[in-house]
Image (cartoon, rainbow, N blue to C red; front, side, top):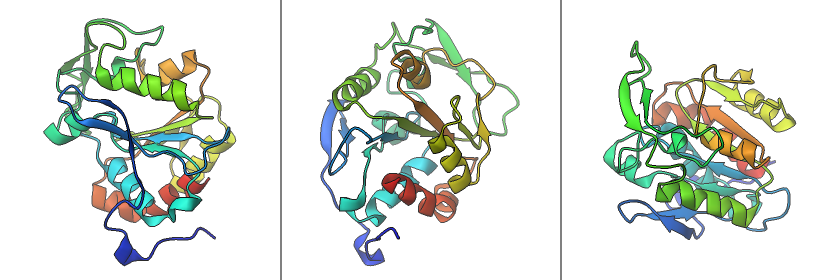
Amino acid sequence: MTTLRPRPDRGMLPLHSRRYGESVLGAPLLWFPAPEAHEKSGLIIAATHGDEGAAQVTLSCALRSLEPALRRHHVVLAVNPDGCQLGLRANARGVDLNRNFPAANWQPGETVYRWNSEASERDVLLSTGEKAGSEPETAALCQLIHRIKPAWVVSFHDPLGCIEDARKSPLGEWLAQAFELPLVSSVGYATPGSFGSWCADQDLHCITAEFPPVSADEATARYLDAMTRLLHW
């Protein structure tokens, strides 16, 4: 049985973060190392898009709920802290970080997205960056991964409501069951320069976990138990 901290003690993160870089606006890029990292330790990340906060809040609640010594994996709560602060999908330079990773399929120019999950068209424009890996947030995350060498990565997003795992791995199947979301091999559209594409180039197993379009309040009610178990998986 997973050991949890008493609820009154969960107001603050019970562990120390480390800086692995800084954002465009100078915000620290923070990661929470696994207490006893080993070759099977993975990396769990959230908030690559600053307007996707439900998973970030849920992941923070899970970090605060689980007894620190029981966590087996590294965590980055906010890949894009500037976007989180400014309410932007992009970083502070208007770059969609999930189209800026130095993957072999990176493409220059513009990328589009829907304003919200109810919008009929993907017509809001962002940049993919001046070059692949041009942004400090993407470059720093790549460097962190080369440094800590995680066994796998789970990258949280929304609002597609699925677990994307091309390998249909045991972890992917576990996530689909634990979060009660469908397991798919593809989200159905091209993602050049995405974090997942870069991971594939590195032969690093990356699973994209997409929450459905729910508030942070509903997400923590629905997914906190599963997120806490993922930290201990």
